[in-house]
Length: 530
Ligand SMILES: [Zn+2]
Image 1 (tube, rainbow, N blue to C red):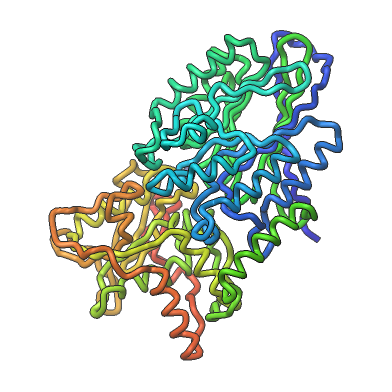
Image 2 (spheres, rainbow, N blue to C red):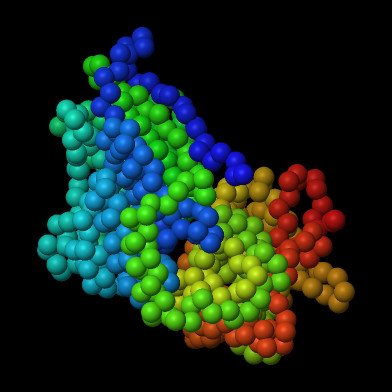
């Protein structure tokens, strides 16, 4: 039996002038929050996440008499295998289905702007029945009707209560996309304050936020509750792992896991006067929660279309030597067998001898799933939601250490920039200050390992995205670099087919002996001892 998976954070929170227990006059407002969803269907062979399970919970809440609203914290149009065919219209179809059962309000995440031109965004906006919200950004797509679909100062009615929703999204300077058809104000807190003040002045009963920015920025905005007590909570996206912050005199901040693996249910009940009670639950969506048969008609329709386009999608192309965990929470925080396999191929991308060093940001490897037993074409298609052309250049040992420090900045939680590496092993102490955390970075030497030499030149292979400064990696541009070439997806496919032809399986387990990444638990601990 599966363990009970509905986790109750069950923090009842009171914000009311009256300290006595309020006689609640329930308006029964329930929000479900999800974010960073790239799949119409569930993940992990259908055992985790997915809109279908969300629909089951939504229908249950409605059956309890709750007034249900769905909040989406952004990132849904791209990237995915399906988006390469339909530019996110498959997700719009799924979100319209949700919206027809309970109104859906979404903020645009940075991935809604992955395309350089506005045409695909315009098509997505026009196909949407649900509301797109934005208070720190506007569209200038050249299509006035599409631009006007982005709502600012949004409110909705629940019984006799009016709820205001503010919404902010990520600027290019913080890892968002910069586009001609887009104007984003990077002063998130300023924009939020203006939007909240305007909602407050209109006399709304409750204010909530739906955002797509970094968690610490949400936490900063949440402090506005001190000035605007009606600000109850902020739900967001961009991080792919669950986030939660609850501090005195601040609004609660919540984010779910990618692909609706973990979502939030937030019940709001209004008490007499200006008070309200927020009761939030973190919900893990797994097999304990049934699929919604009506939604599954839609999911099966898109699966059928995908198989029509790629009849070979489920074809077996190789064999995994062991169960490889390629879920985002893993590939964005730890060394992985799949990441090692991919980066080893990167070093060989430009012929013999292989480059000395290679790395890739975990966020590029998008499959968010396990790869085990048969490797199917679909595993490759889903791993590479982006095109990943590679480049090679040279760096000195000292430069390379500086470059890699960017990969270990911030907290220990999963980050899209966390590197999967090849050609070296690295020992990191996160208790040290940022950009001074690499204790040791070693290359193979004979039978052993040797510290990288500060003045020596090394050949480095990286995706074009990282060469261009993506994810905060600063690679020197004052020397020769190859043109972008050698699509990583095909290298991986090629190698798997080669291995299969030779009767070999793919992927080597990460062990204490062969590990490439060692994060010290204590500063005194020596690197790479077993
Ligand atoms: Zn994002």
